[in-house]
Each structure stands twice: as C-alpha cells, then as structure tokens.
Image (cartoon, rainbow, N blue to C red; front, side, top):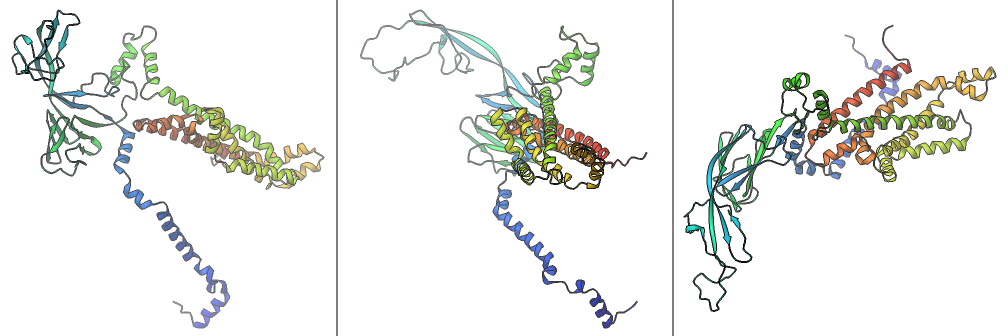
Length: 525
C-alpha cells in the first residue's frame, strides 16, 4: 500500500485546484437545496392544513366507497308492526321483485283478526270496514257483543255526563264481524359475515367477536342497550340509534321504528342481465341451453338475439350506452387531434423564422400558439359547452383549440432546427420555393410531426374523459353522473376499467407506429 506524502498531496491539490478549492456557494448548494425542500414541505403542510385534513377525514366512508367498487349491498329493513315484524326491500333491489334470500330467515305464524263492518240505515251512512291494525279476538277488552261500540260522536263530554238538550235520534247501526287469517313475521335471523343477528319485536340480539349485545327497543321512543356497548357498536345520542359495523361484510343500525340491514356481497350484481330479463338469476349452463336448444321466449326473435339485447339494454349497467359514450370519447380525441394537426402544419411553417423570414408574422403566430396553449383544455370545454350545449362537439372543439397551440409550437421549433444543407441542395438545382419546402424540409420533419400527433392522440384519449365530466360529451359525463349518485361506485369501476383498457390499447398502437416512423423499430430483419 502506497502512502502519500504531504508533498504529493499538495501536488495533487495544485493540479486539481477546482476540485479541492470549490467556491463557498458551490459547496453549500446541495445542503441549501435540501433545506429549501424541507421548508417548502413544512410551508405546504400548514398552508393546506394537511394534518387536520387527514385527522378529520371520514375514512370509514372512504373505505365503503372503495368496497363498492368490487362489491354490492343488499339493504332490507325490518320494521316493527305492533307485536310482529315486517321485512321490506328497496323498490329496485338487486334481488328482484319479492326477494326471499336464504341468508335472511323469517319465522312466521298464522294469526286471525276480526274485521268489523258497520252498516247504517240512515241518511249519510255507509258500509265501512274497521281493522285499525287490531288483532283482538271477539270479546276482548274494548269490544262488545255483536261488535257494537261506544262513540263520542265528536263530543268531549264524559260518557256519564247529562245532556241538557234533546237531540234527534241517531240512525241505528249494526255490526257484522268477519275473521281474517293472515301470515305475520314473528322473528328474523340472519348473519352478516361472522355476526349473528336475531330480531324480535322489542328486542335485538347480536353476537360478534365472542360478545353478545342485547338491545331493547320501545317503538317510536327509544333504543336502549343492556350493559356497555362493545367497541364495534356506536350510539351517539342517549336512547338514540345504535350503529354496528362488521367490517367488509356490512352493518346493522337499530332505530326506534326499524332495523336497517346492510349486507355486502363480493362481485358486481346483475352485470349480465337485469331482474327483468328471462335469463336473470340463471347459471351459464341454463343460459346456454336456452340459447342453443330452448323454445323461443320471444316469438319475434331467437333466444340468442334476445339474450344479446337484454345484455346491451341492462337497466342497471347500460352496456350499450356506456360503450357508445366510450366510442364518442375515442372519436372526440381522434377528430380533435386530427383537425389540430392539419391546421398547425401550415401555421408552423409561417411561424418558423428560417422558413418565413417575417418577424411580425412569426411573433404573431407564436403568441397565438401561446394563447391557445395557456388556456387549459378544461376551460375551453366549459366555454364551448356554454356555446354549443353539452355534447361531443364541445369536446372536439376544446381538444382542437388546445392542441392547435401546442402542436403549432412544437412543429415550429422542429422546423427551426432542421438541417439547412438538404434545403440548399434542392434550391441549388433551381427548384421553386414550394418544391424546396416539399423535398428539402418536409421529409426531415414529417416523421417527427406524425410522432408528436400520435402521442397527443393517445394523450387526448385520457383528456377527453376529463372534459366529458363538464358536459363535453363522451364517457366522462356518464362517469361523473355515476359518481354524483354516491350509490353506483361499481358502475364507476366498470367505466374506469374500460377507459384504462382503451388507453392501454391506443398507447401501444401509438408507440408501435411512432417507432416505425422514427426508424427505431428494433425487430430483427
């Protein structure tokens, strides 16, 4: 190992003076940049209140929205109906009309009640049936033999009060009774993931994570838990609603008038056929059998045509409309980029100093390009939506204006950096100015122009989705409508996946064409 002497070190330092004797600012450059970045992050943290935003964020709702991308909820309600229960599903339930899922078990009983019909013979009397929601048998308290009752007749006097004026005799009435048999729900049992729930009139029993929670319900008054609430149950107000969350599986909310059930299932409900389709709720083999060998469901068309029509016109997923809007987005991106390229091409020749030696025209066109570029595509979309109304024309115009400025600037800069020797060679043989540009300039820049236009076409496929959200047509508007409902996040996921697939396909097509145009195709020949 060679040891350097002090003299050798001094000689090396003298030969490389710039390395060992750097200026102070050059030595402090890296630490100052790092300190500036740290200060900027601290400034931004407090300016945008990032800490409080994170701490106050409703992450439970965010998690629910993310879960809705890959799953769906069934939302039955169990209402209290006196001594019995009533199970109701939403009008547009994913389980169809009159759902009776296996995971929700109802215990029913057959009861009898008396329907009382009063008949009167006087003027202004009618036949009427009085059920009053009562299940009292004949002879129970509050009824009299024959079904007759005591009526106040609109008077606030006690039944035994003396009447000082003589009133005309009331028409005589007779009561007729008829016993009706009715099936009622006495209890409901279900499982929400690992949680087991039993609902009885006036009582809800929940077992979850080896803990049991009993809740007493006084209809229309209060909800009272027996004992302390476990960690998975929340009651914000005393005697108020109790909300229980069971993770991804769903939740249960006990109110004084009903119990709200939220049961979550993995997957997209009714993606192929909606509940109105004859193919709904059938497995693949049953559908295949109906299409290939089953009798015609619709006499006017084959079962295959009916299945295809039911799929496209699915009321919940609207496949035909979504695909049409996606096609509009692709057309918007293509037409807007095409028109921008066509207009930017001649304007770039006039803006390039070496092609058109006119300083006023050069500067005017370059400032025009700057103006078109500095107004964002989204702003142009809002402007044209107001001018033309919602639709693809507004989106095409927004892309056209923005890309005309951007492509015009890129084209002009490319023209100003061409090799003038090729142009001089064409001019030396006596070619006209038009032919000089045609054979001396265009062959040099055309592959680059095409490559830049293809890149913007691929990029505008994504941008057209964004501007569609403000009414400029395409799938962006439909995506925004689905997001605004806060209930169709699975439809949002479906459209996002279609957009990703479209961008991926066009990105690969654009890259392949650009490689060929620029002569960078690396395939072996």
